[in-house]
Length: 282
Image 1 (cartoon, rainbow, N blue to C red):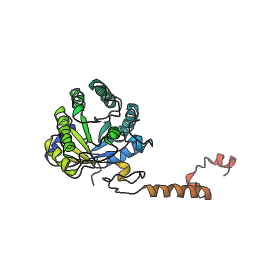
Image 2: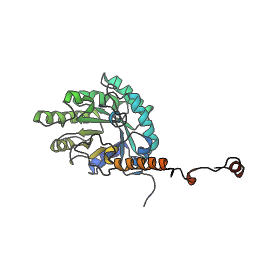
Image 3: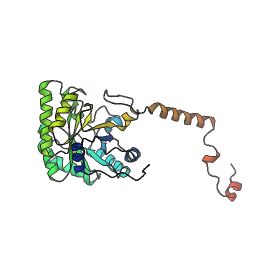
Image 4: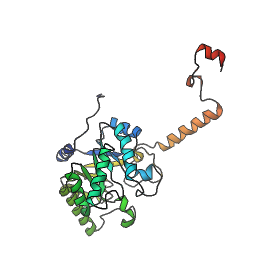
């Protein structure tokens, strides 16, 4: 088995993978320990998403997450994943005012957080914003379909593109982002057929998140993959492990050992020198 670290992919290599029909994977994590684990895996990308508001901070929505929150978590993830491409999410109201604000926020995520690229929600309307960021040399990923920052306007966390008009708009959105220079586009909660048309219509890499199999890659949250986030499990999630129950059991075993005096045992303590042992016997 080859234990040498994997090589961080370059941005152009993602389009090459699309051309060669090689699937890519993006795992969402928020901290150093999880980033280290993903860095040891074969996954090519890590997303530090504004979903940290719901998964980490216990909020009901992503909108309260700040740019400072994202930068803080991107820094931690970068330290843990030197060999994986790190994507920093653009939180609500960090880019919506104008392209100049979008560029400034993206610049901070790369400069202060040391991310490799940024991701921003929004379709055709935000294509000029993407163009502004890309023109400054900052790789950008688009995000269309279910965009959590706009969930209220969309009527909640629902599948998008269910009507002909909505589907055609999503295709237009993807093409506009592609032309603006986005090297990848997240397609969240849209019909598989619509995702297939989009994937075939753009040169950007399409990354599905509840968009079926006909895309160039997939994104899932590490907490969902491992069965750690039990509050809500989306329909499109496959739990590869169910660790929440095991972890709770571990905490209970620890508590039981402490109460019974089984932990800590002698091997878990420090005896000190012979002089200290004589002066302070245990």
